Image (cartoon, rainbow, N blue to C red; front, side, top):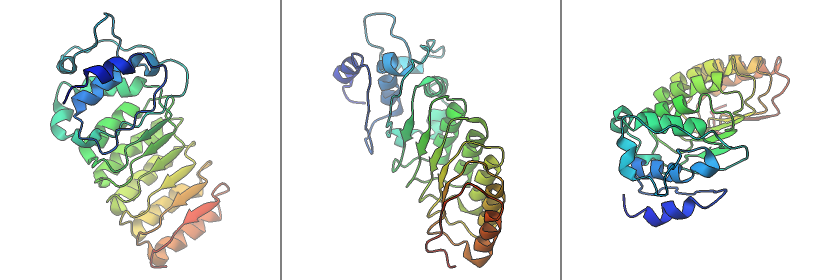
Amino acid sequence: DGDFGPLLEALQTLPKVCLDMQVSPVSLRAVMGLAAALGPAAGGLPNKSSRRPSLAEWSAPDPLPLRPPLVGRVTRRLSAASEWSASSRRSSLSEPVVRVLRSLVIAQLDLGSTQLRDDSLELLGEALQHNATMQQLNLDHNALTCRGASAIAPLLRRNAVLTWLTLDHNHIGDAGACAIAQGLQPNTHLRRLSLAGNQIGPLGAQALAAALADHPALQRLDLGFNAIRIPGAAALAEALHQNRTLCDLGLRDNGV
């Protein structure tokens, strides 16, 4: 993990942090240590003694209780998720990860271009379903498939504050678009949804159109660089007769 001691100690003294670790070769355990160090600003794990928490403590079976999240906006870019693998999901680290992410006072989470995979997103989605502050989630340019999109659907259904979701340039396909559409049907808060470059065809576009027709908040939908073709475009056009909020629909390079 490298020597993160000085960084952890420094972070513990800062009231507010924007941490950019994009494309950093940092392990999950190191990221969780950073989350603990940021506890005073972000509702992370408490440090009851004067010493900093050891990174090894994240493998403890009985994690420490969380601090209540403090009021305020703290933007986090924890882009070191490239090692959130199936093995780490099954490990004893899973519960601390979920509890920390649930409690972070976080307005924007940018995990773009981090090689994020479906199993990691399942853990992330579970943790963020009830997060009360996250408004923007960026997952673009990763390796997500329809399974990852299915993990996002419950987040759309249950999170009442998320307004911006970006999944550009993944591989969710029609099945993933259908899963997102199912999550949108009970959703009343999302304003921007970007699914460009996801191998979505007519079936996926038709499912999204059905969800779009009655959505009370969505203002921007980007489906550029897919393959929805004439049937998909026709379904979206029909949905616009009912929808009263959408003002920007991106359909560039769709064979229309």
